[in-house]
Figure 1 (tube, one colour):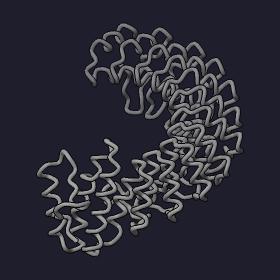
Figure 2: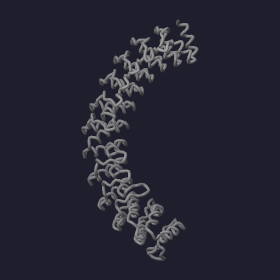
Figure 3: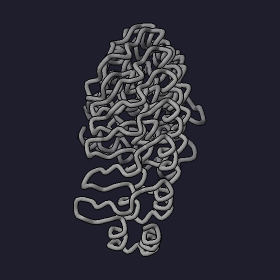
Figure 4: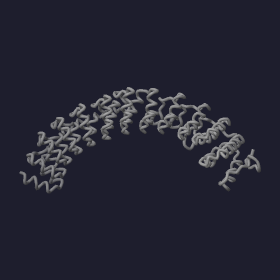
Length: 436
């Protein structure tokens, strides 16, 4: 049957399309093979749905009927009808969805353009009515597209609570993972959809999914979700498979990096291990010291974090803060009796690390706590050798004021003056010569 008919119900011509409509009809009729018809469908279906914004349902029903007639005439697979079904579901046209389902449209066919099934399209559009119609039409509630995404994951990501409830009632599987290991729970957690998270927790979750949600909540700063996860007995000591240690420890390190005190509070209240470390031995306190999170460092120390905990390279929180120049963090650590004499695997002390980077105020703070000013580290370098070699004049003056010895030779038989001269720091050379 041709859609080129003259008068009558099949000769309807939508207003406003002009020559484009005639060209489209002619192309449809000339397209006799299913493969070519499918290739062109992506251009035709959007044309039909330009009317959705105007709400001209009669036109849509007429167009849908004509498309089905052409599909039958060319013996096209019903997957093309699924594309139209998805568009109708997204826009909330329940009557059109029923008609397409009766005409045999594939209820689980994913669009080649956006890889969404009709059920996912209904979720995307927030259309509860068409969602129910598709479910009654036996749509697979757990169907996964090419990225392993499900309608439930999409509803969780978009925060559609009522739709998510309907999918759960239809026995959507909360344990399914997308291609990137995302679940419905982690999707809702990342977006901060508290009510959706609550619904998903109520139906029960795997221990690994709860653990993942915990550190995602820390990543995005959702303290209220962290608290809710502990209410549903998330295990903060669950060990992640990615080698990052316990879930609670990972969440604490993330919160320390983000300088998020409220999340730190919620994690500690839920009894996350404040001294839990990653595979490289870094704990939350070490991360706070690296990024200069003074208040977080204080919070962790007040919660019994080990002030002298060593990472795998032997460095303590004090060494890390001294290296990165965070004066307030160093002072906080010293108030909690951090050991100024400890050395890392390369025999560096906190004073040596601060001197190499030229952090004068930190050097002075450490020396006030009786750090050894002439202690030698790797290759026999002292704090004065390092400060002079790297051209830190203020640090050199501070060390000299604390009676640093200008006559000490390193393993290469160089003094601080010789090191400054070799690196072209003539002003420091003059200062050291006057100090002899």
